[in-house]
Length: 328
Figure 1 (cartoon, rainbow, N blue to C red):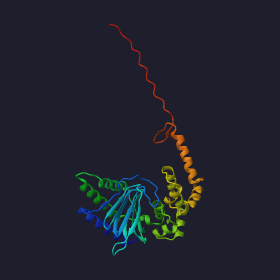
Figure 2: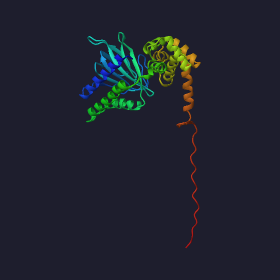
Figure 3: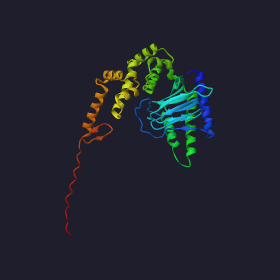
Figure 4: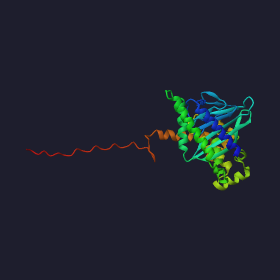
């Protein structure tokens, strides 16, 4: 992230704040859908994602709808909502947008550009410490909910939330140290990028290194030194974790899950899955279904620290104490 990149981000937020203050914000939020679905050509995140369109257009695709986000418009995608993106340049300017993402006590801001027709990718990214991350998330989630609210105060609520959220982003760009861009911070950034983009078949060590501004060899050595795990193995492991979730919670076939997990070849996906789990994806699903059916055939009570499969024993009723009548 250069000084020019930061200056551009400040200008984007300043412009968005000015529009919001005049009540001219154009906000897009997808309608409610079933979350955490593994759909081919789509991906999702475990936290909300916020897009500020700078130039050109982003065409968003969701399971049940599509919409376009034009220049100076904002889009909020709630956590877990599957979506795909195709981009277009403007009449006389290339595509560009600013995207905010959220991680554990960390906020990411990145500028995206068009790397080939219709395909956006990260041009510059910075991570900021955000100990008040829950406040950011509350505002983002509240804004998404307020957008579909029907009440006399709808406009005032939405305007207030937009201003608060944009103001916080503007402040963190101005005052955030960005110290996570140190060499050790690159390991954390690499993990965030893998978890954010694992569904993309183009996610490779060289791609991550290019984004983080270092060589692939250096990043691989640094990642292994800090985590004792090779970065290529980490990418595969996160993809397999996503595939396991899909096998356990969806009815998608193995090929669909392979594509949704970032594998362009279902046969290769099966080989990698077997290396990690000792069985094929189909065998794993059969095992999980068998275990689920076996477990669910019993009564089950879920506690914070355990699962109880006993039928439970009713408490015995206390016998009434004997009474003594005292004659008069």
